[in-house]
Image 1 (cartoon, rainbow, N blue to C red):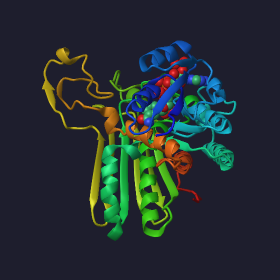
Image 2: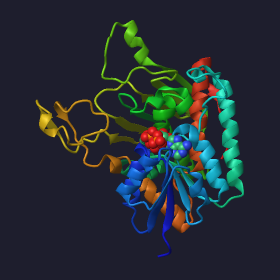
Image 3: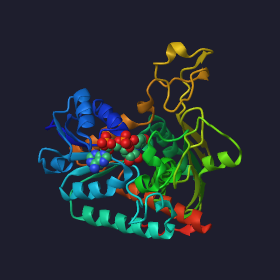
Image 4: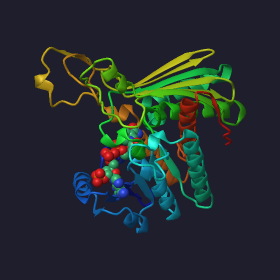
Length: 399
Ligand SMILES: NC(=O)c1ccc[n+]([C@@H]2O[C@H](COP(=O)([O-])OP(=O)(O)OC[C@H]3O[C@@H](n4cnc5c(N)ncnc54)[C@H](OP(=O)(O)O)[C@@H]3O)[C@@H](O)[C@H]2O)c1
């Protein structure tokens, strides 16, 4: 076994925590998170203390200057993904980027008005940004790891094993995928300036990513080249804005959204004429819903990453279990609920980090890489154009 893969972590929030727990589970590859940098030093120090990370900084650029660090893991807000990806690659280091790779975050518009910008202008800007990533990557021997955990979820891995057999004689006709919950924990997510969009960019990006991955894989298996998305039509709205109109005074849903949509649906037409219908919403009570339904000409596969129903619990009085973790975004433990024994495992977080570490150590491509990350952004922003212009939007992707 060679020397360890040395990781630099940027960010000290929610995603950084589950990534760090995942590094602790990597098997067969020696891995060391040697440094963490975040905006607020004290938060980075707290996380460093919990995970035994030796060096703490409040400036990520120190990580880029550290020759011992092979890969930089970006767990920072969406608007920072693109600039930090570019800097990391230019520093000659491999990079892990959380979803989405990039978006439109404003070019001088006043706060709260970024979401009103022409979506065609947004699409043009993100396309130029994506081309820049490709250009910067082109002559550098670094790996881009796109942290789309859905591709790595154990339920998806099992599905792939079955699907690979089914597409020999059949075809995936429709993929329906959904990521929904009762609203983000982050105030930033309410504003386009910080997130680059609403439920479509933040939530539907997961099923879109998996849907594109599945059709790529089917195409490669059948004809040696990916089946690509060619057309997008979408709808979106902030459904919580209808509450006041309907006279509803309070709701356990997150409310007070700014200039982003909280409900979105996108239909993707693939180059073989088949369809993907992807849905992301912040208006669902009862815990997270992360599901995919794959309808083939000769079979059907359903994936439930969340909720997981391997454990069932009923109570009238949830007081005794108040401090027991059940599920993300579960509003109440009264009545029936389904405590998840290992949410992060079900969601594929340790598996994605395992793949990224192997990609670096064994010098191979990660399963989830740059092309997928770019195509998800294209589909999302073509979706925004479709919402605004109320028509289908044609893509011209090649890869
Ligand atoms: N794959 C998934 O299922 C999943 C789930 C959740 C999030 N994510 C993605 O993960 C990313 C981070 O989300 P999160 O929920 O972890 O957000 P978060 O909890 O707000 O954490 C973001 C972290 O980035 C730090 N930061 C902000 N600006 C920085 C800068 N200039 N330099 C260094 N650090 C900076 C913040 O510092 P402070 O502590 O000072 O604020 C904070 O520690 C997002 O892109 C999100 O889409 C993915």
